[in-house]
Length: 126
Image (cartoon, rainbow, N blue to C red; front, side, top):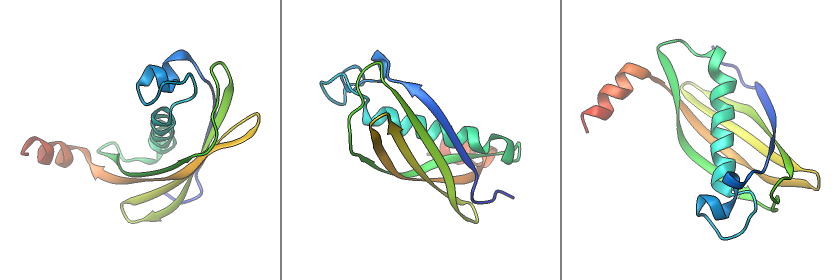
């Protein structure tokens, strides 16, 4: 059984492929909001890896982000993700991203536990 309170954090450096200009979400060479979203989702998957049954996985359902401060190319930043609520198959995560100047982003992400085979079968019937 997955329990709330699980945490993971990881340090990153803004590389060219992480920038808004490179991703296409803007024109500046700063950390792109979609890149933060991807990193948070990936950290959630890593956090749950050893907690999941081999026949299940999680899928993202909702993402709420406040990107409040830029982080420039070659600067380091950290993302911390916490599993803050478990409601049956619904998992709610909170996250915070910081760099040397302070907070750069925060928000929530909801994922659902699904049976992998059933999920893929239902998706293929669409």
